[in-house]
Image (cartoon, rainbow, N blue to C red; front, side, top):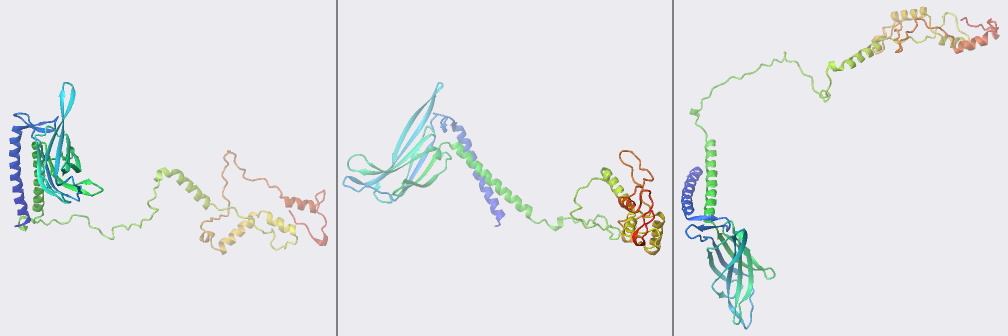
Length: 389
């Protein structure tokens, strides 16, 4: 038998149990009703509670009894149940306590006595109260001695399930008592809880069977395979443009060209300025290259004075004929023979075409040194001659 067949059989057993519990619940609903004030079910005939408390006293261990002339040699367990009943008279609530005691049979004194007895308390009027379990030692004279006791509230037993465990009586001697308690306060709510648990188990099993059916392979005959051709665009390597490798700079956001109008204009103006040739530096050429300059003042004056147009054009012609253009070697320096026109100032004043020529400081000093008051050249020692201006 496979796992699925076993699950199916278990589902059938759960369904049978559910039907049986449902019939019992319907019968109890015709006989009982729930009292919300007391927290228990009551009979419809006489209004008596059907709540029941079962206390199973099994055994004890590490128990220490007294040994004396007046101490007895037998022990038993006494169970006391105290229930608080709340009754309403008018607008005030009144509470009363009902106590009931029961005893087990007497056993010989020992460290591990065994009773294995169940004490039942039926017809508890309310679900609020306490249960007190005491281990007693019989005395020859006077009342019996209490060896150990446990106090347990009924609130711990509201789930109506059996709670069985060892309870500590004395921490110093490590004496313990094994008890099993069950408080059936409402048979209707207990059956409803059982039906809910059974329904959950049945749902889980049905889910398991459904998943197994989905995993079973479908016969190949029932599957109609239809070949569907691939639909797409053919990629031709020759027609596909090659994309450049992306770098981290390609991810930097940039403004569109329309928003970069000012930047574009500035770049154009900068390019124009770069293409403009700077002014030709003053060349240290004399008017007559065949004549050798003999004085230091003449050398300084010739170096400071600007070149004539004829010498500049001659030098530019020689440069164009003998040497390649400077653009080939210095593309970032676009030299031109004629200087570019100067831009007007922001004030609106226009530069004059011919600026007035003023003598330099060295020319004024040389004129003062080599001319007299009338402006005639002085006689220089060692046959030197003044340079013409």
